[in-house]
Amino acid sequence: MSDAMWWAQPSAPEGASRGEGIRKQLGRPDLDPLQVLVREAAQNTWDARLSTLEVGFDVALTKPDQSGLQLWKNLLLPAFGDDTSLRLATVLDDPATVLLTISDRGTGGLGGPLRGDRVFHGSADFVGLVRDIGRTSRREYSGGTYGFGKGVLFTTSAAGTILVRTRCQWQDRVQTRLIAVALGDSFDHQGRRYTGRHWWGRIAPDGIPDPLLDDEADAVADALGMPARAADELGTDIVIVGARLGSSATPKADDPEQPRTMQEAAWFIGSAMLWELWPIMIDTPHNATRMRCRISVDGHDLPLPDADRVARLQPFVRAYRSALNGGSPVRSRTPAVDLGRFAVEAFMTPVRPHWTDIAAPTDGPMHHCALMRQAGLVVQYRPGPQLPDSDVSYGAVFRTHIDVDDAFAAAEPPTHDAWVPKNMEDAAARKLVRSALRAIDNRMREYAWAEPERAAAAGTQPPLGALSSRFASLMPTGTGSGAGQRPPRPSGRSTGRGADTLVRTLTPPRLIEIDQEFFVVTDITALSTSHPILVTATVSVALDNGSETDPPAGAASPHVVRFESLDAAETRPGADLTITAGDPRDWRVVVHPVDGAATRIRISAQYTQVEAH
Image (cartoon, rainbow, N blue to C red; front, side, top):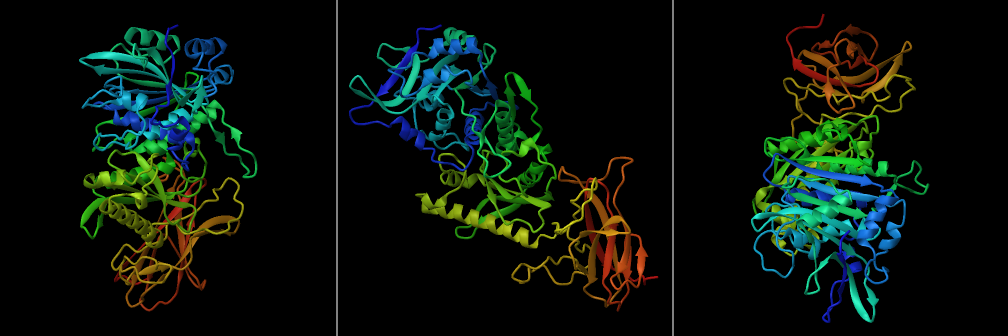
């Protein structure tokens, strides 16, 4: 197919980085390796984007048949020496071998010079991926700050091998480049020491491997079945040879994990795309370019929903848009610096699990803040306090201010999955990052303690059959004259919002059975009886998409049946209750729910001159 061959890097007399040492530079992130792969590859794609409305990021999983694998064997075998460094022959002889191809569209490809020793003052992306290790990105507001993150491309391969085809603009023309790169273990061969780094290409007269170019590169790529591209379409395709797909969690914690099938890996990758990349996948007025993600298995696309239609992601999307439109500023006091914008949204925890949540930071109620820099990629879902009611979750967003983005970039480890200020060299930058993290934690703590727009636990409920077992309501809060007091913090200290709310709840909303029928009830009390008070109960449904909504036309809807005094002396039908001056009684709101939805109750109260009938 080609007269290209492998070349292994000999150790220099003064020493060199070994392959196993380079792989360790990633550390041991908490994230699944496929999640790290999605983050790092998408970050590279996003950093290489052109001024287009859409950037494409595609991942394809394929299992070649014997004839397909033979083409790869003809191309890549024999490996250098006895192949103890890579085990490439073993991988290509395995009929279960999976090829994982990462492709981008709407990018500039890997341009710049072919050699790492050439002086070049533009973007040297080819050298950055193929030649260098540990090169810092110099792009403004880019997602990547280290060159080590690309190591996941090699660690995901059972042979430590990738094949790269890129088309770029170089020296005023379009150029195609094809080269294979491998990262194995250091080894000895014929009395010489080698680093474990390998390149496959055309060996130049000076003994260094260069990529195949233009027509020859395209011919080989086409023969191997790499993604088709138009003659002038720029971009990059990376094939991971012998992809490690990881393991799937088992229903029981003690059961051994099972290797993922290609379909399971595709679901996980699709979920990781949504959870890691949603800020750049959604439409926003502040960003004309967005990322379009796609995942396929043996040529069949896995339908990937819009990020803002994924139930557990919706509060983060709403919070992000709120932050872009101003949000709540986060500032440091000394020095007085704008660190970024914060916003938070509550939502009903979805009932039904969905494959899009496989890569979510938790499989329980959300109580996290998505941290991100100017690039718009999620750095980390930082956990905050969980709300008392597991039926209610919240999602927050913090996005750095443009003036301090570099300080937060310096706080990221090679996998870009956290802000770790303690190891930062710049004391001023370290102080800014610590101040932001402290403020974010405080905002989430205050929200969890004092936010009135959250649900109260419904407690143990009887079996309901087709009726949803997740009836919950928002904690009722006054909205009329004098409204505004929040529930006290656990310490009992005042929240500073005033103490003249007209009504408060005595018990969390709960489901009870009356005459073989189920109702949602909550008990309230008037905080002052010096004047008549008009209390109004409003009910609605909260569906699994996380939003409060009206029922479809013709569908049933919840409704307030009555108010009844807790002393059982009086019952008043309807959604309005007038509490007369001097009436000390407490009251119960009785609501008729509907099947298949959580019921949400809101209480408003205001002073009134109308006496009760």
